[in-house]
View 1 (tube, rainbow, N blue to C red):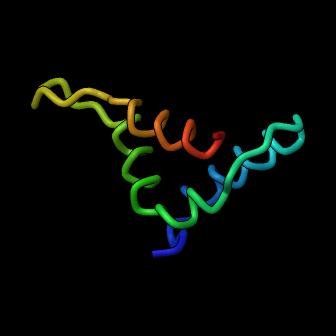
View 2 (cartoon, rainbow, N blue to C red; view 1 turned 60 degrees about the vertical axis):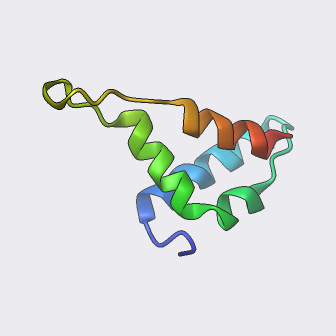
Length: 70
């Protein structure tokens, strides 16, 4: 799957352009090559349902962003 989800693609493009404009290098291939992980990390970072004991977890999203910045 190569960025088939429009929301994920748009969000990553926004992040990439923002960092590029601020002279911060980022490896966009990490996002491209791991698109399913990126999408799932966005879901994990935002989804929460206290009734079933599921809480938002930003760790996966932060990890892939850190990896792309290195």
